[in-house]
Image (tube, rainbow, N blue to C red; front, top):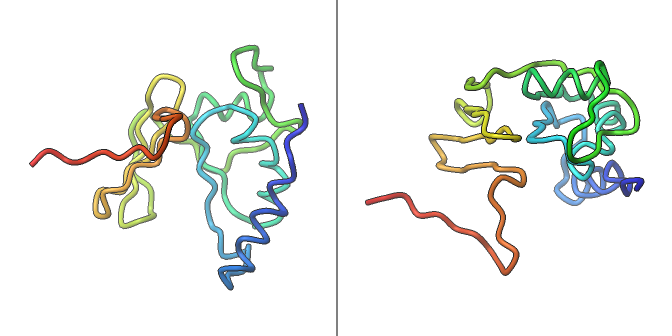
Length: 134
């Protein structure tokens, strides 16, 4: 399965928002599914953005060693610029925190109360919302 050209879609979205693709400074990898990594190298080259991934998945994205688990990797090896540990803070959204969960990295923006989950939290029948306890 060859992924569709997500680079063109990202560039088109940027144009619609009147933002240059070079304004994208970071690409956060949540997990190793092809629909999340398929055009990663081309997107990295198009934007000049740094790629952030869990330290273990960084090896697989570079195809060293070859990954034999579930999902599919990008066709071309990708060098990750910044590896993340099991919990780590990033300089985005006033302190974005990466948490390693089984098979995923999730990213939480504490000040904005936004959680980026990749496919770790999904709902097939509509939007998924979480309310903080009162």
